[in-house]
Length: 243
Image (tube, rainbow, N blue to C red; front, side, top):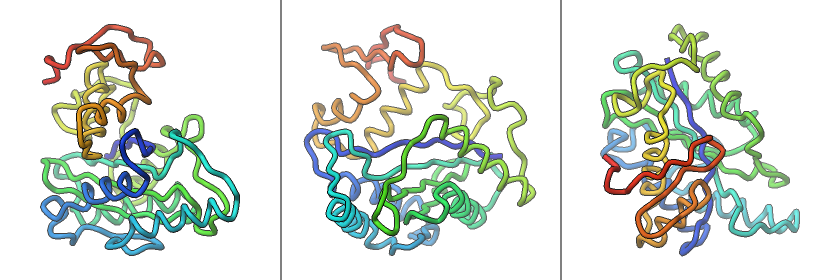
């Protein structure tokens, strides 16, 4: 049984594209989480130099197409796939993560798969280059892409003899119990996830940290962040109640 989540990676304020991609790849390839890099694999790139290869592909894309985006440019995609505790080995999880990325991108984008074993549940962090291998187009976060990824992941799990979530919209354990539980995340849990993702990008200051959150939040100084109105909730939550 696996849950999935797709997150676009932007430059954000206070850093360039090179720093953004380098920070996220360093985070997911952390040797303390990947058994000394043993649980890191890649497709159409070298995991040791993926950040530079992704940036080079971006330069070629801009040169070939003449397209240059601003702050909203998506440099890469961060796809997380989490498995139920004790259901799968780290090696097998890495293989399934690779298959998920191949099918989702139709094998047209380079990526790395880093399997983390620092938590009770095994989970994959997949960093996908937004630029295609032929440098002619970019991967788009299309409408309902999260549902498409979940269906691909479920199909792969069934093909390999693993369970799937029977009712992905039903309530289950909360995210704080384990990252791979079949849960419908609460308003607070979704805020926590957004904050964790921003911290994973290693902001150099609190202002940069807030900049990473702006695509999802509207900042109201001094200490409030209401979640994106698309979630249908407007209640403020204090930073002091983060835990």
